[in-house]
Image (cartoon, rainbow, N blue to C red):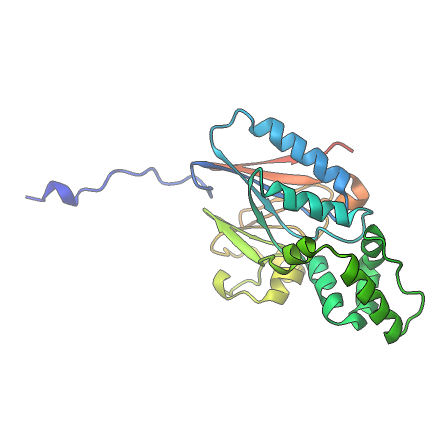
Length: 252
């Protein structure tokens, strides 16, 4: 006779990936200096979650700076959100480029190609007028003085990924056939085609940004939420609730 203590309670097999039952997760795509869209999205989330008994978790997928006009205000607003919601802020390749410039001003030659000018101006710093190492150092020093310590600490503390339930969140994606715990920083920040074209099971569904699309993408192995907010006016959030995944967007 089998002892009663050996019987386990029946569990329904999950129909799909899920987040913890007591949570509703909002994963927000690349903001890129569009503080106006960030404010709109937070109003939408606040209104939608007001009557929800579950814990509201916000996951920001990275790329807070560059291209749009208000990187400084974006960072300030994100810091404030920590007092209102449970938050996870991930690092994007543009955020890393800013940190690289603070460490090594000659990296401005690369950073200026994808948004440095807009970020510097948002902090009241005039970009370099010359393509010279001395000019880059001078602007780096002025930017370091203009960057509030809370903003620097926020950016320096950004992790590359996080996991919630059956979902793995990273800015760009993951390299197929490598365990999630062994992913390299360069891939988490920069990967494109090898990840986007893969039909592999990554172990968890990967929620990512980095590659702009006209509409959010939902596949068996990934969810893409970068809808080019800085030029399209559409900031996207994936809403993960139980086994459901739906999308919110700011109006154009």
